[in-house]
Amino acid sequence: MSWNKLFCNPCELQLLGTLNGGQSFRWTHNQDSNEWTGVFSKTVWKLKQSDNFLQYQVLGSLNKSISENNSKTHKLSDEQNFEILLKKYFRLDHDLRKYYKEWSEKDKLFQSACKQFYGIRMLAQEPVENLFSFICSQNNHISRISSMVDKLCMFYGEEICNHDGVKYFTFPEVEKLSDPQVESKLRELGFGYRAKFIQKSAAQIVEWGGEKWFNSLQEMKYKDARKELMKLCGIGPKVADCICLMSLNHLEALPVDTHVYQIAAQNYLPHLRGKKNVTDKMYAEIGDHFRNLYGDMAGWAHTVLFCADLKKFQQIENSDSMEKCKQRKKRKNK
DNA sequence: AGCCTACCTGGGTC
DNA sequence: AGACCCAGGTAGG
Image (cartoon, rainbow, N blue to C red; front, side, top):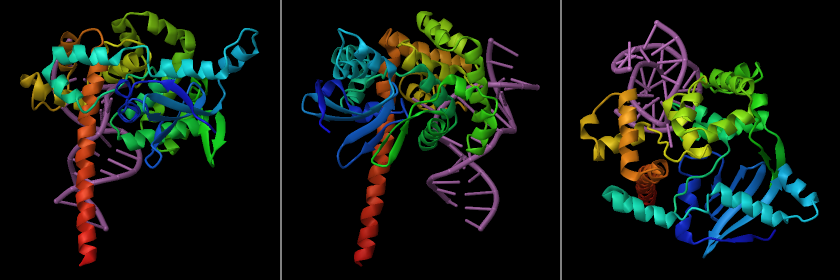
């Protein structure tokens, strides 16, 4: 299969930080080929970057709008339609270098942090996947979150295609997750107390109008959308902010988790150091601090900082394990 | 309103 | 080996 090309300056987009930075849990990276495989818009994508291009293949798709567009007389080609989806998902219409420049001018820490972490984009995710993925994320490790999201798709999603012996699924519809039997099934699958949250909030969303309800949240002001989301069972301030930021286009939303608290206390708000947990009051203070600092896209800026922080840890871990690896080899040679 | 604790599970550490 | 601790939080007291 040949690759389609989309012009994209490499410093405008970094796939590693963007797809592996805790925004989406559905992308896998093949280190040898440097290719990414993942699902969004009921479509299986393979992505890689080279020179000035983002290259992509579509391995399969159940996206109806694509086939509907094709049946009309003056139609867009498949390629044009897929390109539109990709541009939307990565928000390629935003000039990221301009944002980085603005944020750097406003904040020295950002300036130094962003040097190694160019091209971190806020994905425009689908609200349903975003919401249920982040219910899974609470009090949890990324590796287990990913495996839970996989399970949701395998058991309640629709198969899109089978590629190289791997089956790919859509993210399930809310209606499927609202079935009363879902809770016990998910308990069985190791979701723990999140099982109840998933089934219950799915039922609430269906009751409130499903798709329509999500659309209304996009139209609302950020604070109102957030308040609305927090009525759902299992969604508190942090997850509500993740959803506002990542899939409802409220880019001033700023999720405050343990990492962000650490960053804030270390670098900006020393009086918050050494607290056991983040209270509502602290949460608001930290969010407002970053909003005052970065402006109406504070959530995106914070994601770059978060990513830099996350990657730092990973690099330390990697170099640790490399050290251990070398030591092991030395021992073997003796 | 603001603080406390239990909560499922799996992976890590000592 | 087993008893901790912790992980991108939240509900219910």
